[in-house]
Length: 182
Image 1 (cartoon, rainbow, N blue to C red):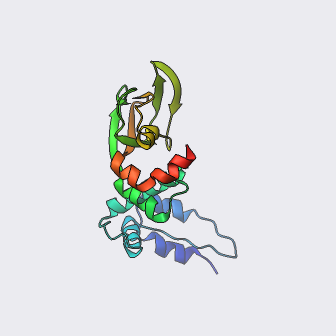
Image 2 (image 1 turned 120 degrees about the vertical axis):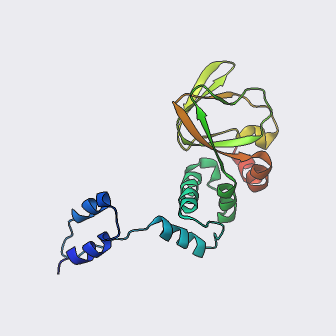
Image 3 (image 1 turned 135 degrees about the horizontal axis):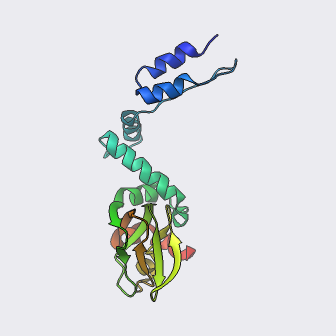
């Protein structure tokens, strides 16, 4: 039996680009399963999981993007699901252009940052120490240990998208777990 009719049914509600991609699927005799999850379907699934604050497809996509990012950040790996959810819900997107200083050495820290897109350069006393890119994080030491910023972080790509969390929220959610890590 051919899987073609079932693929055709699934393809009916997709865009023309997606349709052409799916029509070229080759299936052996064992068959294949195809699942398509729309933004609306994702929003409904998240709502069913108790994340009822997510009311639109865009919010569902945004939440999922943040969750994937948090799962890739090393210092968040020991957080409970509840703590991870709180981090994700507290993230605020900030966009910077090339040359912008995200944090400055010696300043009091008020936020923690995770790089969603772009690159930043870490400078200590004006000297380049390293470059950080997607999924990297910075700013945690000043928040965890109440010490001044130990470096300046400057955007080196044409632009950068950073997720930030304010100190009070960050401390409430993760302080004990991360202090043991550092």
